[in-house]
Length: 367
Image 1 (cartoon, rainbow, N blue to C red):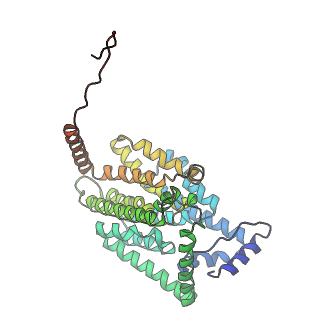
Image 2: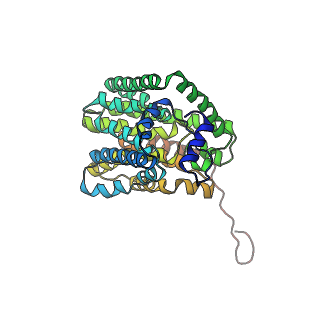
Image 3: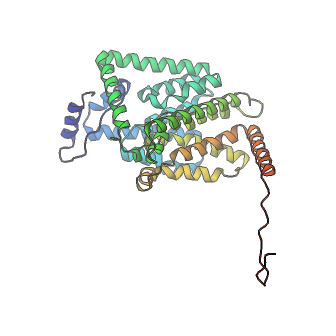
């Protein structure tokens, strides 16, 4: 799998009448544990099985979060689900792992950790998980994540040997070069790096923006997870636990420069958490707009970036993280708002008054 020339020959044998370039395989050997069983059946059947199984897991997790009858149609029509099926990609699998972790964390924390540890099949999506779990003091979930993560790594080592991991490391280096040199079009990507690159920022500035966004998002998400832990007096354990995973998912899009639209299918879960809170306490200003935008945007994310050379995905994800923050820490949000208003009023008081505009009388003299 990690020989580009042989991999391309296999692609051509599967699609002899098509010319589509070379689709490289940049996944770690842990993902091969998923691919090998599917490779035992014909290609089209394996694709159908993969999409049906992962799509079912994804929808079932969302239905556990939103069991109301009216929620079924919006779930089935969710653009992230449509994109995952249309691309034949693994966004529904990774989204399901996030979703089941959200559903199970309150009552079965170790199993929830097992789900999160499964994200070693795509480790760039896993960056936020240990930060949030540690800040939330979810020690059983941490243990579950370590067990499943290390277990999958060990299983892949036993199945494919050191050569598999050496090949992955070599391909990772090639992938970084392909990404940095623009061989992967920036309009396909949904990260902060890609958004900066679309605006013709140099690589050092784009990477700087990516790192700054990642540190900021992880800091905020970790603080929110810890703040939720302290709200046992007014929130039930299920709401607290699912909210902590919600901020984990909402912070994830800022953590990697290599992010595609199908990777964002998991955003359905923090959106669902917000919807549940709104049903219980009423809608707050701006929430409907942010949820509507986050819901529909994925369907045209690539096309919008290709046509306009602007990547607004980080802005939409930041808005989603902000409305989550306001829901989780409304008192702190109110204090922050008062501080900003106070500083703005001070600036306006210190700003020199504008001189009155001179007018002219009917005889042409200034009045």
